[in-house]
Image 1 (cartoon, helix red, strand yellow):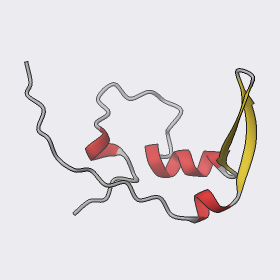
Image 2 (tube, rainbow, N blue to C red; image 1 turned 90 degrees about the vertical axis):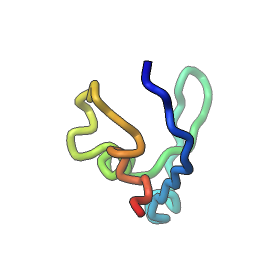
Image 3 (cartoon, rainbow, N blue to C red; image 1 turned 180 degrees about the horizontal axis):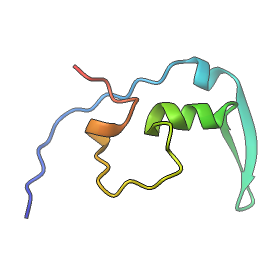
Length: 68
């Protein structure tokens, strides 16, 4: 069993993804999403964001995690 280390993780998302939002309906509810959702997802998860990654580690792989 692997012990998880407690640490702070900071996410930084450029404001241009969050200024112009679109509204979508999902399961009967309305949600605001980035106007260029594909670009946002590529920023966060890489150009191949549609392909599931079994070895994904948020702290290492998420494009929005502040690397310091």
